[in-house]
Image (cartoon, rainbow, N blue to C red):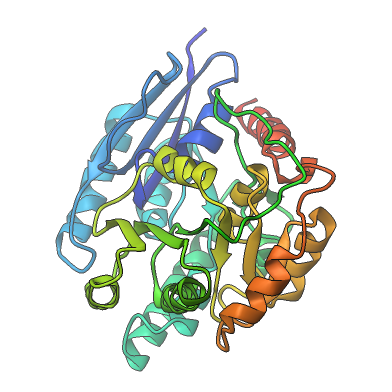
Length: 375
């Protein structure tokens, strides 16, 4: 019997992205009689993938360039050569080309909705007012036009079920829970913090809306009160002006380290820093595009029993309280000493890491729906 082919594709995510490879890719590779292919932005290839998982690092371009348009042609050529039975488009930009391919073949189209892209464009300040609303209109129009042809939607956030009416009833909620690596071991608990040495961590996307400058300000205050405090910033920053401002701010601060910045950072390197740190920071600025979403790093920090300082948010605070995983603060009004007194007065994860942070249940749902589509 011929093997079925599944192609997972993203224009901007790296080929080793945690959702594309570690979660969707490795999980789908468990299906019998299936080849899994991942097409994405150029990055170091993961080591020792399953025998039926293949990589196509097609894309490499500046974010605002004609290379981004040429990437569509490269992707279409891959589709014609590979002839996948199921195409999982993990970004809105690949929807039109994927849809065109399904018209020319008997393949099925899935849309992996990792973000509410139109809302992100409207709510975040990455473009001038007119441009961001124009881009948001084009994105939402594309999604709505192609939605009837989508066989199934994979949805990363519960809130999108209310925000995106074009989903109808053809969706499965596949959240970004933590997928442990082969060397993962549940950390010891409860967790106690020391005033003598406090290693703070800011990981993931480096951006103003995610509170990078508030993280630096809090680290400065902590360092004044607790001289053993350090801050590690690790991740990718897409805005050159933001990155330059960060470098200027930390230039004379040896207790703050930047890893990555203008380079993509392998996920395992981020996990290594989580394991070395004492407190994870989630200083997200109140914004409609993130307020009802659960950051992936929240699950990552909890899986490693890392206490957290996070911005006040009812959804996040409920999860935090259930696991006794940290405290919520107002990062817009940082008070290092006051926060420190509360932080050091508690112990964390008295009952260990809750099962809800792990990928296992998401994998079961994913394999079930994919099995039905392949049949």
